[in-house]
Image (cartoon, rainbow, N blue to C red; front, side, top):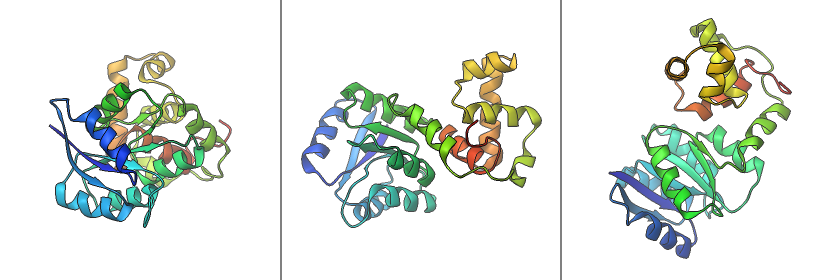
Length: 217
């Protein structure tokens, strides 16, 4: 059972999310919060698997709430929901440790699928904003020096991480490196484990911030 906490300052939206999620046998809404501060408090109390986090909320916005939730070593994974297709929200959310980003304008079935994907330990970006991630990293002033942390990776693992940061799928990486897709999945898992990263999205952030991939690549 996937335990979900709804964090949004609009009661009608929370009710709508609940109506979408509750009918599914594998999903249970275990709480609702109307501010970032309340989301942190409730997350500690009800131990959700996934937090659906709005960005603009009173007391503390969803980005800061995500940052503090991740820093608290909670096992909950955060799926950011917003009505605004702004790349600064997306960029900040991923740096804060969010595992997914979905626009509230997405079809209802996409929300259910997103909850399952994030709960399964994977990362998810709304298809309409995926390109913005790569573009924002490519123009940001990051990646100025290669980190010593990269030394824990093998040469092949660094190649795989570089391809991940450039936005390639596992199938595309397999084709580019002339290996099987299962091998790529194994390398990606190893990279995340060695670097202490939660998911593929954090791998993209790490690669750009630590010089593996440079702006404009």
